[in-house]
Image 1 (cartoon, helix red, strand yellow):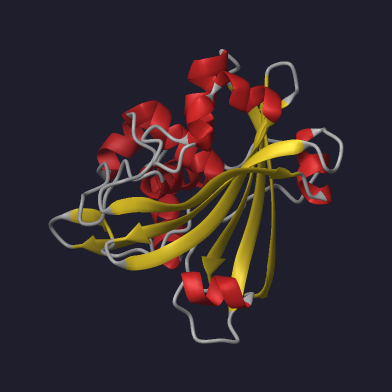
Image 2 (image 1 turned 180 degrees about the horizontal axis):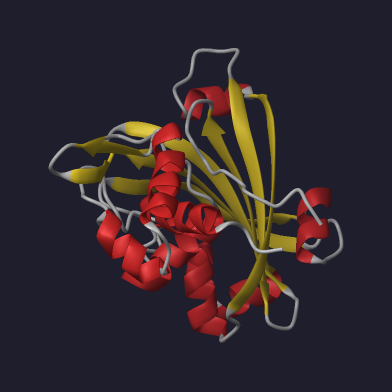
Length: 243
């Protein structure tokens, strides 16, 4: 069953905020524009915008409409970053950048082998990075790629930023377009290394997200494990609870 229209509207605007298409301080489309675009009543639009207000993503000011809140704490998933790259050519939004800590060939741990559909111990490329907003570290992540992939996309082994993002780069080098993704999340205590990289005073909870991108053939393209500090809004899932 499809989600109610107000939830679809909220999800669309939320995605645009997360991807940086709607930036802090910018005005979102007016209620009239949203009413016409979605072919819904004003009451439905108001209900959708209230969802975003409750999530702390927008403020409504009399005479100016609804605007994206300043310094919204966002934790973007790998899939959301890929969509940003496709739209803008750059995986990061304004003010964001990554420091690449390492790019090396290593034996695949069990969880990486399972995600990429290979044998544990097979050679894979591991890219480790810290993402910043200004001077503040907001996430650390590791991306993993098979030997076959790196043969076609050698920049993965270079310790430099890939402006368009690694998944987009792999797509352009191999012709294998991401078709679907699988994400799963957990919360746990940060390791000592994560505390240091994210400049946290331990013990601290972090959110861990795991993402696999699949091509149209159903083969894994990339696997990423991302770690974000507690308190950074990531996403809200809405779904029907009736048959």
